Length: 316
Figure 1 (cartoon, rainbow, N blue to C red):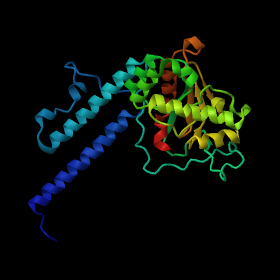
Figure 2 (figure 1 turned 120 degrees about the vertical axis):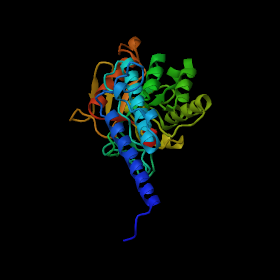
Figure 3 (figure 1 turned 180 degrees about the vertical axis):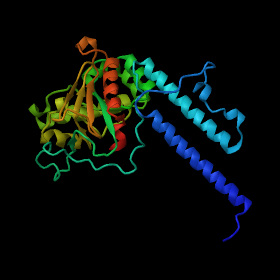
Figure 4 (figure 1 turned 135 degrees about the vertical axis):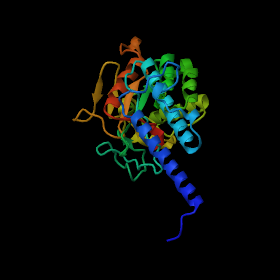
């Protein structure tokens, strides 16, 4: 057995500290994502964690670095808890996992296919993304209500969502949705006029979808590859037209959330990993409650059930 040199001891000690940092980080992040909303209260001097916060300034070397890192994590969790309370939430929304390195294969949900689905390479209609991650995806349709409080709330809480826009409802204020886009929200296609598409000819369906692609490119700088048929209704012509307009995916939803209740597609009346949740840009004018009220109901439910909200496009 060779003798242990001093630098070997130092290397082992450094490796141990690095492992300790990793373990502590995981523990702190886990405690911050447990859904209880609990976080260390600020101390009298306003510092995170009060009297129990690590005093990194009195430590040197690896131990000081470890204590400083722990302090930063605790402070971040205190800030998240404060933001949650500001928006009427007692539990801090859970943090989603990193986007999958390998995207799941998206296929049409069984029973939601059309004739020639695979042979024609048509965009799949699906209600749930195949994943084991305990995440759900929030999608917001139409564009009638343009509530600035909704933008602030979602940005403050850092909740990802996808917007499906219809031109006849958004054209009076494209700027609102540009601000949304600039905050990292993906804007997708929901047709020009929100018609019942199966009642239209192939040519008219194509005008509705491709026409909205033109609007999206002109107003927001990109042609979406994701499209939601109005009312969740479609036929083979819908998906053929969507494909011709550059669409790759046609998600609908598995649950819908309102300001005062949820509606579920499945018999178990529950959430599932990868579920797509629908809501609308609506407010008191439409008799549905405010957008922030809807977000509170949504987040209280998903957080209590142990789900994080992830970005749909990260899984496509």
